[in-house]
Length: 464
Ligand SMILES: *Cc1c(COP(=O)(O)O)cnc(C)c1O
Picture 1: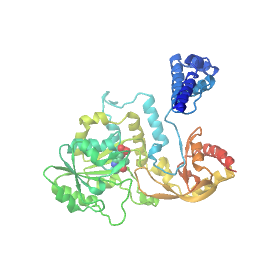
Picture 2: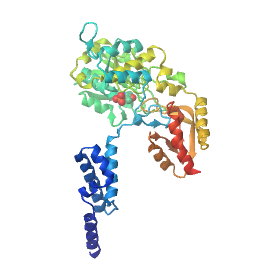
Picture 3: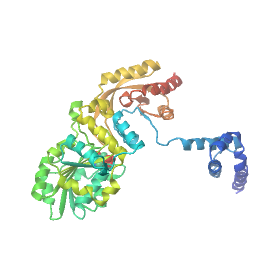
Picture 4: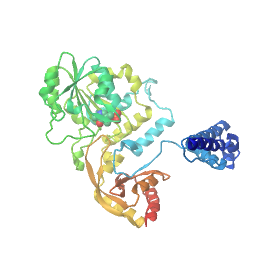
């Protein structure tokens, strides 16, 4: 009792000792701030810091109470608000398509096209020949046709939107047959069954998690079946006793049942991954060849462009989607259209491997990466160069890796070292494994080496 009363008295004394807002505002640390920012912003920052200090004290913790200290904190908060929250970071994880780090970095040409489309006016929905209203769909359609061989193509915000639009447009109020092994979660809570339900379709699951045969689909067909949906398992792999029908087999079932065949291939991989020593990743053009009615894929995975969702296929099924009410809500932004167009042009020009950053990275040989890691080691006079693996990652090629060489450092507190790299002026994201700090040069862009070496200097210096 006595203790708790003393404690309360103690607390109220501490709370009373916090300075007033005006007292903090008079500190020199905030003189410049008051010149630069409207007064209410500065007052607001000081109030916030005082609130933080108060709640720390209430929770029995230490809190800053000197006016100068609180003024410093408020000033730092104000400066922080002017810093962009979304920043360039250096990806030293070796994961090529890193979903948390913004997936694919785009090519120089795509970046320029996106910037030009954003800073000036564009012919987004204007027909320059006729001088009258045009369609935003035109900018990607012929490229999608040329690159994939599909009759028709449109673009929406991402592949999730593509699936939602296709199901809403063609399957609402009806049944969609999906293999149990494909009723999956892509990540971030995006689950195929939920999307189908949201889009108004009824999911009919067939087969088992590891085995589904063509007959399972055929037996599930009813008068109310709208489509057979195939979903590429882009972020996991079932190994061993597993079987899924080929697209050709599904085409037969769909023909017999007179239903749509929809193929969500996921990563939008237009190149043959077997040429890079990886397993085959389904290509949109192969699904078009196998006569899928609609093929869906992302723009920012293995396509290597900005965020987008592409829907290609037969005109009969693509065209009604153009005028679907949801299209207006899901349509792609002009910068993304410009970036996707520039990216698709790299494929048409046969220069994808050299021009598109993710393909350049995937294509790098271990020997080149060894040289780069050795250069880091030499510049730092520290760390080791070891053989390792770079995952492709991010909803594509599950469990697939490319051989690499990494720079690594045995460190007493590797997690602290990784945190200090993230604190660099350009934050660097590294891996920590086996008590080691590990940086893979595969995903460090040319031109970022200097920043990496500068940041690592301090860490190497701190250990030795
Ligand atoms: C990644 C992925 C999606 C979602 O694509 P977003 O572009 O992220 O919306 C849908 N289906 C499959 C098979 C995927 O791999």
